[in-house]
Image (tube, rainbow, N blue to C red):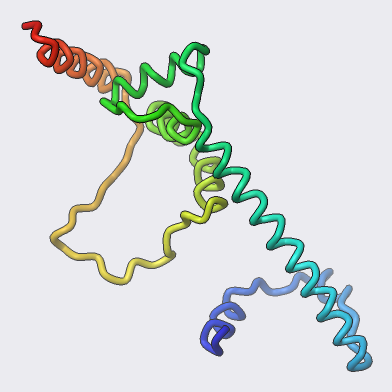
Amino acid sequence: MTREEKARRKEKAKPLTPTQAKNLKPVRTSEEAAERGRQGGLAAGRKRHLEATMRETLKSMLSCRVDLRSPVGQELKARMNALGFDGDPTVLVKVITDLLFEGDYKVRTATFIRDTIGEKPVDQIEDLSADKPAIIVQPFSPEQIAKAKAEKAERDAKANGHN
């Protein structure tokens, strides 16, 4: 870690509350400092291991296929058809379609999943070209869903030779 990274991390650190400051015990010897550092390193290692395990478990779960014979699978297939998506019906697709069709109430869950599997975007965008339009995602209204389903059915009918 460079000095600049350490300085940025220190700036982001939250200040101690009065209770936390009162509970701090000063380091008396270099051996005590070394032991505290060792314990902190071990705790950090345990946390990294836990996060890695959680990340791999989530990735595995999100890649599982959804049984299309189940009620959840049937709903997912209908949503995928409404969006014109013909890919594999996985748990990840279910999470995304829930966000698109049902709105903001699951955003925190999706954000947690995204961050945990290591797909968190950078905090600042350095180069945002004017020629690239911004993409704004909003939940679909029932009217938009019905229209998308009708258009999909029309496309399918034309593809099958029906006019």
